[in-house]
Amino acid sequence: MVELDHSFSTGKSPEYNWEAILDLDRIIPCVEGGKVIERESPKLAKAEIKVKMGAMSMTFRGTVEVVERDDDAHRAVLQVKSKDVGGQGYANADVAFTLSDGGGDIHTAAQINGKAASMGEGVVFSVLDALINDFTTKLAKI
Amino acid sequence: MGLDTGTHTLGPGDGTLTVLTGKGGAAAKAGHNLVIEVTRWSAKVEVGEGISMALMADPRSLRVVDGSGGISPLGDEEKEGIKQTIDDEVLKGLPIRFRSSAVNPAGSRLDVQGELELMRVRHPIEFALNIADDGRLTGSAMVKQTDWKMKPFSALFGTLKVADVVEVTIDALIPAVSPVAERHG
Image 1 (cartoon, each protein chain N blue to C red):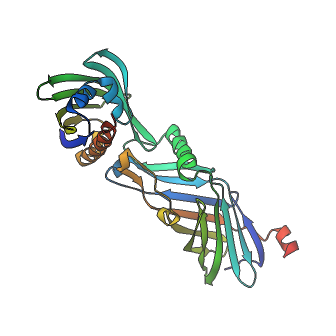
Image 2: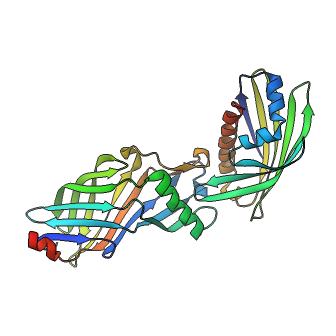
């Protein structure tokens, strides 16, 4: 398990941000290489992420689901469950958003195995950290 | 060093010009060390009172021949992908030219100074070559990309990078003086 904390700023109201992060069609493409394959319900989407590693790339396909939602506290947890397409690995994560005025905090708890994990936990941490940092810059423009 | 006076012209039929790249960054383990062959190039070695050298390489002729490291082996598709990346994002088809300004022989060794043009930037470079008695030319030059204002290629949000310094090696048999050059020499 790898755990990371990040914050983001949009300069917009918590109400606006709350609506945005719960809209899976908007938030999933904020992950570089991420796209919605099918929106199954307001809180569940089939999705995939293609992670480019120079010449190589890995595609993870699965679901993103809003599994916790506290409208008063503006706190939500999005659960990612995905499998490495063409491999044996998986990448799962619980991504908790806690909004504040103009932005919010993100706590990510991720479990990765297979080829990606074979690089070592330190590498996985660095890549996830960079991926989420990139995600927060895209969130700022959501 | 047994080079006849005149102009010796050489190219891929005479040997190989190869680029060796390393990798860096937090996710370096995910990347490959690459062996890239330049498949179209031409060089001239002019031997008179002194020696001068010039080389031109086709920036769209690089071909990945091997890759080591990484989390899985490089297949043909990945090699082709790297070639495309080199063409589109790294060298962009811009001319690659080297011309010597000084070549100092020391036994079988040649200390070469000159200027290399990459990405429309000219920058001095120095390297040593060896010429064996049978005319075999070997040696390598270290090219620090940022000296040519190039940004080393990176992926995975900057956690995987091609090392700034790449090694360019040559291993070729210098042919006899070309008849054309002799006539004009």
